[in-house]
Image 1 (cartoon, helix red, strand yellow):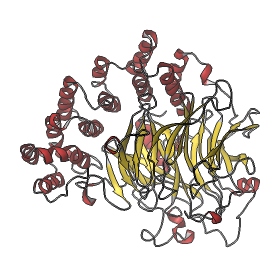
Image 2 (tube, helix red, strand yellow; image 1 turned 120 degrees about the vertical axis):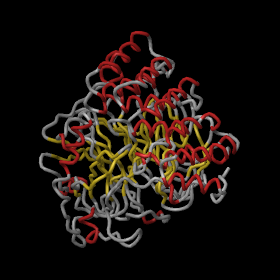
Image 3 (cartoon, rainbow, N blue to C red; image 1 turned 45 degrees about the horizontal axis):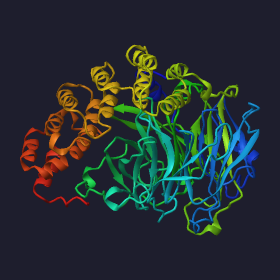
Image 4 (cartoon, rainbow, N blue to C red; image 1 turned 90 degrees about the horizontal axis):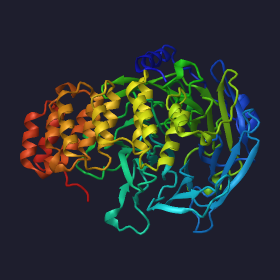
Length: 622
């Protein structure tokens, strides 16, 4: 992985070349292509090649996929969408593909499970599959040494709604913290909990990013807002980036953040339209107002349209350096892969319009998601259908198509590795890989082997040494994440990392000390000191998130220290995040509200506090 300064320079360098202006596809041209001809029709940057990994009839209706620790591709096929069938009549299934010939094409195909209903999300880990199929999040065990279920699906969580069946739980991704993350759309109103849980033990979500802990069995909403996000990835510092549809397309999501919404209101009605966090994009990919046009000719030079799916932050190590850290997402109406270039701004980013990466030159192309593999190449699943927009009419959906493409640079050979056979100490070594696939899979395998109960002394010593002494910042960060996910990060060691030279090391340590929502008193005292003295806006962002996980009665000193930072007035996140931490404090303690009003050096924050104290903000929804 590249150091942050070099990444920024390379990101800006990508912007030197303006995005190409693709002409609208001629009427009736290059549509309904065979899988092989669809590959030939693609326009890619010089040096890149696209190959067909699998196509119909071997794969159809692919809606989600994941790459396991052995490089196999697991794909969910959604034949039930757009209308959930009666219980027991589901038609969806999960396939497994293997490239045993190492030629970029599958050589072995296995049907793992059939009979699922309205499947929408998939991820591999902890000896099985995590599968989203509203109203349930399932865990399906995998039989040891075989590509077969090791038992029936287990319902981990229920209450996932499906009023709008293209806005259900989707695009699962393992986070740096060892939690399973997923997206959720705005016109579906879920009330999630363990099976049989009463309403007061459930969590509402209708737009945003959620996470589930695989061993602690805890569900949380990580952040709220946007529209119908259908793609998430984490950058080299573990920052969550999602794409959205219809509204501005790009968001950097912080824990406890509330973001611009397509419609409706936040569950906390004190969070209003003027105090939710906006997009990080400085551009749009379409012309006109929210619904004015999806005409490719009108929007082509801007990126092709307002509908997006999939998110990949390239960190694979085999593409040219200028692509490292860039954001890749599919533009459905534009039939292309958009690329946005991030630039650091305060605690967050600005997303600039980069050159479009791929043009499919085919109106039926509908890439749903992208993932990089052990070689640094990228796989994409293509729903491939003439019908582009969501419809409740199942007769309009073409069930006969589906493709998986592989995008490679140069003559990069395919390899086949099995991380499962590696020793623990070898997995720790993989945390320093320049290919994010190795670091991510190694971290999760270490978490599985320890079940979060703590690694042995030698392994812990190895991870601590990497976190303290490795010469590369991102390697140190990966070691910290692994210490946490394996349950090996003690409070004493964590307090040492609060003094790290790296702002993201300090920031993530803050988050880890607050995982239980009950940090120790000396940790809170350390946070207050950091809020007063730490120069990093990233650290203050994580402190603002942490404040929301500290009991209201104990957070006053921390919030008062944060709101005093007048230099944060124009930060893309901090005034908003300070308000989310302060709002319940102001509501419960008039004296605290008056003190915050006096100490705040951020004008719009003082306005929000004043409004809340005057009672003009509505009461929070239970």
